[in-house]
Length: 253
Image 1 (cartoon, one colour):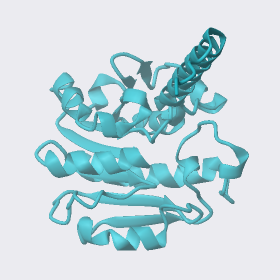
Image 2 (tube, one colour; image 1 turned 180 degrees about the horizontal axis):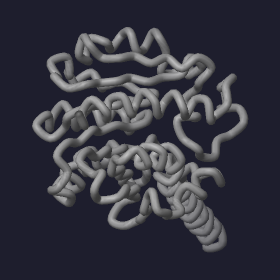
Image 3 (cartoon, helix red, strand yellow; image 1 turned 180 degrees about the vertical axis):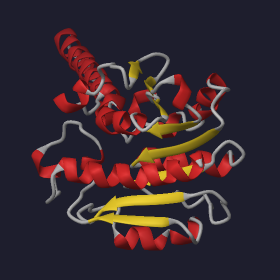
């Protein structure tokens, strides 16, 4: 029996549907790849230069204190899908204490795709004697990963709402480490932190911010349903900065 072929009209409809699906796939794919959480107004305001800190955006977002104060630098890896500017409020406060601070933008805003960018930053600033690296969320995981594989470059590690990957064993790392997390973070909590303590040095300092959550480690846009914190962003930031500066202060001595 002869098989009935599709009509020209039906073929055109099928081709049009396939083309539409391809266009929609490309559109939503681009939307997904380029999505980022933008900075809140307070973070945008912190991007303004003044006598205390000069802020530049190329080749990385940089907070630069007066030259005479610069001996220790802080490299910070942003969390996933977060514009580096979303951390400007915190980075500026660190820079005001005399530390050069660099926040690199990652490919599709994911530090996992350029975990070794700290190599470029360190080479770019040969006058800096000591480097501390840190990061938030997946940025913290990648900062720990970099530290594990480049111990000769790093003098301190600061992990915000994160923990090392299972293949990053820093238990023998001889420099200061602090792990900071919020009590209302559903993912990085007492249990997940405890499970990975063997990956960090025994003298690691753990700072649990009561009432803090995952997203108040920056100043960026989030959906209301992701806001778990019971303390103000300002209060959480003060505690984050204090714990971070303690590590930087130990290195700068």
